[in-house]
Amino acid sequence: MPKLLALPYMQNFKCIADKCEDTCCQHWQVRVDRVHYKRMSDWAEKNPAQKVLFSKSVLLNNSEISSDKNYAYIKMDEKGFCSYLNTEKQCSLHLQQGIDILSDICAFYPRFISVKNNIKELSGALSCPEVVRLCLSENIENHVQLKVDDSILPERETIPVHRTLLLDGNSSLYEKYFENVQQTFIDIIKLTDSNYFTRLYILASYSDSISTIYFDGCVSLDSDSLENYRAHVFDSSYKQSVSHFMAQYENEQSLAGIVIYSILTLKQHQAPEENLSKMVRNVFNSYAKKLGLDSYKDVENAAEYSEAFRSRYKTFSNTVHFQIEDYLTKYLLNCFYREWFITMPSAFIYIQMLLVRVAIIRFIIYSRVSPEMSTDQIKDISVEVIYQFARAVDHNMAFLQVVYEALTEQQMLHFDYSAPLIKF
Image (cartoon, rainbow, N blue to C red; front, side, top):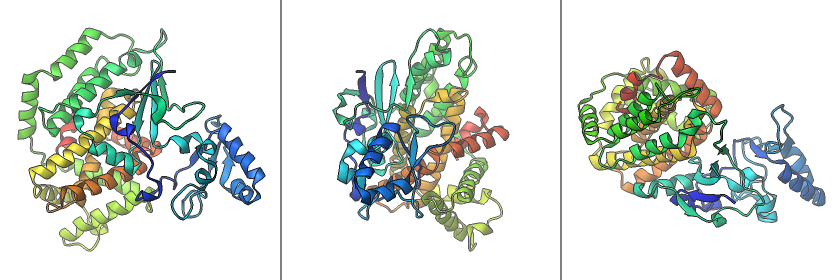
């Protein structure tokens, strides 16, 4: 059995069920694997009261991409909730039959398990508010992977794995050096002697520099050059020069604000009833009122949001800035462990897309908190923003693909746009 490594906050995770401010049993199409579909079917046959519910709610996947893991799915009801969710926000299946009948998705969410060279890695999906709370509460120095036993996982015959990397003679160079670059990302974002903006710029600069030699499909790679790039970003004089540059950098452009507005507006058009869309409408309307308008629909130039945001941002104390930047750092760390950049054409494109996501989260948090709020109030709002964003964007690959294509078309997946995204 492979060893299990887990981020510390995931070692303490337990579903808080009806005590949660939200429920994960809504709006998503929940996959049901073949084994547990059979168990649900057998139980329904023995319980007439469950038979009709099962036949209406658990449907076979008839698409061409069906598999044992994606054998069926649970259809949400007319309000978007799972039909097995009771009025106390608890799973009736789980209550009556225990974890054995639940599909792998339901049993393990929000746990995200990857395997690299026979080592299991456990991280958490930030679409769960309890995972976000634990993640944001952890000291940044403890955001490392620790060896634990499998007892923190639900008991199961087999453990569902989301992603696997097994290096062999057929592995690409992109895969071979993945862990080295991934660790460099983690080490950069944990540079406690550099401020938040400096660390993000170093991330962008490093990933852009290595993209000339290290990318999907590269057929040769000088490992010494890759190591030299790593050594350079941790050089004290380089960090100091970046820190000085970012301190002096004044972003007078409205580009980042326009990008954020465009992406969030697209999201509202696609899913107007999602909680993130409702949250964003309130934010836009609050800025519109400050601009002397009745509604965000009356704003003719998205650049006006950038100006209003910059004015608001300046009203916060360094203490608040540090708290929010600490939360964003932990968001990034979770992404580096859970997401594998080798699904993208290059490490830089992944980082640039990640900078866009972080910029959006930062914009929404600062737009919803106020300078006089307590630390706990700011944390509660940050938790809500991050988990709602993760549900609507991070876990929505179709939407991220649309964003990727739009940024590519506008030629914004370029290092020249990194600093405006970082410090807007």
